[in-house]
Figure (cartoon, helix red, strand yellow):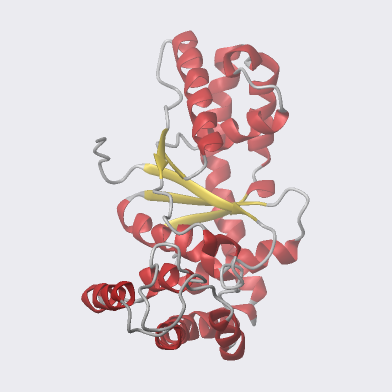
Length: 298
C-alpha cells in the first residue's frame, strides 16, 4: 500500500458540460472537500467546445458544495494558453516517448505535468494509463535536462462502487440545486430490489439504488448498518427506506441550493474567482513551459 504524504500537488476537474449531478457528488465531489484540507488541490474546468454558461454552472456547483478558492485553485483550461503550447511541444518532439497518437492525449499529459502534479485521482483505467505514459515523458525530459524539471505523477485509483445500477438512475443526474419536488420524484423513481416479492421478503442491499445514496448521505453509520440488516432479513419496506433517503437528501441539498442561488445572483464575482485562479495557474505553467522549451531546444 502506497503511503501518500500530505501537501502534494493534486489535479482534478471536470468537463464543463452543465450542472453537476448527485451521482457525481457521491463519486467525486465530496472527496475533493477532504483533499483541499490535505493537499494543494487544483481543480480544472475543461471547457473545449463549451460555453461560458456551462463553465459558470460547474463553478457554481463547486462553490456551493464548499470547494474553497482559498484552499483549492479553480481554473479554466482555455484561460491558460500555456497549456496548449506545452501540449504542442509534447506532440511535436515527444510523440515516440508518449506512444500516443491523438493530440488529445498530449493535451492530457500537458495538463498533468504543467503544474508538476503529484496526484491524479481517477476511477478510469484509461486515465491511469495516460498518467503512466506521461511519466515516461517526464523521465525522458528530466534525463535530457540533467535535472528534475518535471515530476512523475501517481494515479490515485478510486474504489469502484459496488452498486453500478445507480449510475444510470434519475437521481444520479439530479442537479445539486434541485428543488424539493424534483428530489421527491427522483427518490421515488429509484430501483430497489425488483426480485423482492413483498416487504417481508429478504432484500438485496448491494444492488439497491436507494442504499447506494444512503451510503453517501446517512451520517449515522450504526443506524444505516441496522437498516441494511433489517432489509436483508426482510420486514423493512421500500417505502420506509425511500422516505428516509428523501429526508436525508432534502436536508443535505437545501443549504447547497441556497448557496448556489445566492452565488448565481453575482456571476461576475464568480467569473473573477475563476480568472484569479487561472492567472495563478498561468504563472506556474509558464515556468514549466520555459524549462521544457529550454531542454528541447525550442
